[in-house]
Image: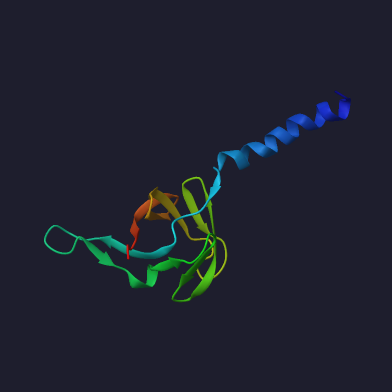
Length: 116
């Protein structure tokens, strides 16, 4: 191995590590996601928050009442990367079940894929 390769190899490895740590690129199931806050024992199980609802239209596009945009899934985190929800993140809890990330942690708002 030549001297330049020996110098550049550690730098390339260090730059690749954060990308690997973010998780593999993927998608979430297409369909309508209904978002809600937890209810209480004496009332509804969940209280719908219609302004938070969205639909996954294709492998990388979402549609909300305010407009449409793109999203990126890396590991168990979905990030809206353009459009009206740009920067909003969700934790993937399971297939068709997301929680909006607030202050770096999955919050109370949950979004569930509606079966048709």
